[in-house]
Length: 577
Image (tube, rainbow, N blue to C red; front, side):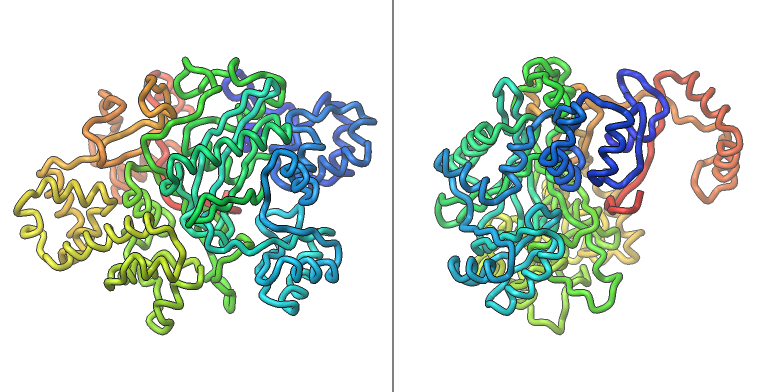
């Protein structure tokens, strides 16, 4: 964790801190000043995002790194340039019989117009060497292209004109390779939205849910072939566009660095990508690195998941007046949440509750995020930050999966799962009474609702238990009386084939037993009074802790097996920490 390395005051094998941390702009001249002062042996450019990558390439091409005797660790600069420069990338893929989407680079507006007319409108315009799809967009004619090209040239001296593949599936694989040519795919992910929406603005599902076995292994085989041919050492990410009506695919790009997708893949699988990539950059191989979850197997394995993960973006577009909420190839989200569960219905509802605390789950009408003034079909056709709720509202109003698919191009498998949620909601609403709903087969009905991700508050809303806080408490009492309780499951990376040794947990109703045993300790209570935030005892306790931290440390030292739990919920927002 970079933040830990920067701020940790202790230095040991478990939490190694940095010897020195410089809070300075990552620019070529600044980096060279530090290199001259510190005289390091090597430099890693693939851990600091697109900015670090660009600066590393500049310093190498200028010869300054070579002059200072600094070796680039991990993926070498020529391989990085091959992934960043579209023409070199295209040539490299041709050497192994792979193709990218029809694409041309341009250094001025005239070249861009020529390329667009060669491909045929509509086209995607984007800046090369840019982060988050900065300065990109779709152009339907010469005028729109000129406008987008001029904007893109403000962020880069090269722009890319790409074939429009909107409507195709967008998938990505996280790949790890060492210097001995051991190569594995750690995680594959699938976008809920079809191509045309930036990955950072799309709901992402891991592992992929709609691929056939043949498609999965076809893309996996290609990923390994491409990464080996490019000579990546460490971690990288390869993105595909897959035609949903055939097995035709195009490689969109390869990111030879840690990215947002790497963080998601790492958390989703429990595979420590950044840690492993660093070890590989230092010359170790995958076989010699231990799997930090099982503590017995090596890092040279492909995680197997018995659960589903959803990443849902969070936007703050409503903070500003006259800002469009349309989503496209340029990223607009400011944060994201990750939900883990055993079914897609469960994780999509969990994610909705986390990303927006005002929501009780995935509801169309009751979310208040759809418009009565704009036709529902228009809300479905245009990708926006609220389209998911418009889709759900359409399904609640009786639209068929085929009709919604025609408007959105979202895969029918995902839509059928959303339809399950709409049908279960409808059954609860039509019944309208909690006792009547669970009078027959109560356990099975309650279990089915919880497996599909419905919260106690949602069930209270659909069965008219008002006020909701009281209603949710009633549903909870009923649920516990029926014996429907959640299980605590472990992220184990190997689908329970090997014992896991990790505190990375999630809760789900799709299980019969806990993966970890309950603690036997008594709750610490020095006052004898109920410890709720409103009580005087609670406030006195907090005050005493803030005055004398030493007392707290002594108390914890006496309880060797005890720890501290930090409660919190909601989206991680960029800029909030």
